[in-house]
Length: 271
Ligand SMILES: Nc1ncnc2c1ncn2[C@@H]1O[C@H](COP(=O)(O)OP(=O)(O)OP(=O)(O)O)[C@@H](O)[C@H]1O
Ligand SMILES: [Mg+2]
Image 1 (spheres, rainbow, N blue to C red):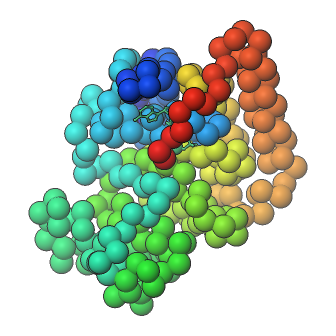
Image 2 (cartoon, protein in one colour; image 1 turned 135 degrees about the vertical axis):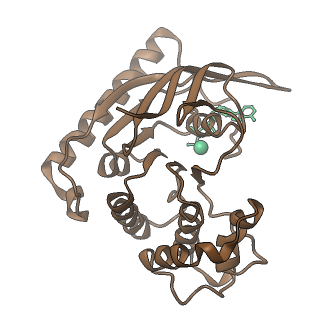
């Protein structure tokens, strides 16, 4: 088995003017090539911190993290990142936004023309290449950011609540679209969300983070058959898995409260 994301006992403590914030403690996760895992947990528990740690932009304070066999270091081309906001540059057209990382990397964009066109076709954005971001809906902008991340053909995709800002209907559509892309490309995906339903629908495995400081409370293997049509979310099996995970989270929170570990939010998070 080729482990592409390997986190061992990672921890992260922020040192701010208001004191220390222990965001993650002893978090471990192994993701093999082609796996789709989801990480769920309540707001402020450390999900974004985990993904930032994996990008190398905000390194962990302790433990180890490897991506594609290497200790996490600088951002790299074979690791794509998709954030909650599409972050398109407002002064660039859709196609120029997609080309932006290629330009930064000094790539010849014409070499990527066919690939980008195929991706635009997959996400239904052909014909919008010359639109400015403010002429696109939130869902279209997020689809553009998926194309931007996939244009360089990364092996690993890190996604931080990418559809969190979208309405429920568009979000379900985007989840189904992401699954169809994953079915075709079999990228290794680590997907952060606070919606347990979304995690169960998408992932092979769901890591549950406890409230801060986040540790792995439990890992659930989701053995719903693939491919998963949108109707999967209406099945009894689906409801049962979601209910089991929700129960486990509420048990864990109770346990933490009893042991005095539970920390209420003292700092607002910028993410
Ligand atoms: N730069 C920072 N300095 C100090 N504390 C921080 C910093 N960034 C995050 N934190 C704190 O670390 C904890 C985890 O934050 P993080 O953004 O990882 O949570 P999250 O699970 O992604 O939350 P959400 O679901 O709201 O996005 C929070 O208590 C937050 O206030
Ligand atoms: Mg976050």
